[in-house]
Length: 80
Image (tube, helix red, strand yellow):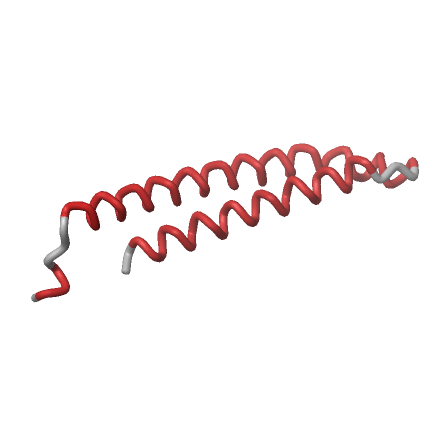
């Protein structure tokens, strides 16, 4: 039963980690949604030979994936 006895600071730290993980997940979802919305310009940009919109939406999508992965990692640590 010793593993269930935690100090108040450990409980506070786990709650803060869960909150941080949730925020990272939300920010990542917003970035992924923005990348999806911006991807409508990719076809026209590629057809015209412009690489701005495909590059921009790829970078925004990668930032979103990193934020979601970080949020899931933090939340996974919290559940242990």
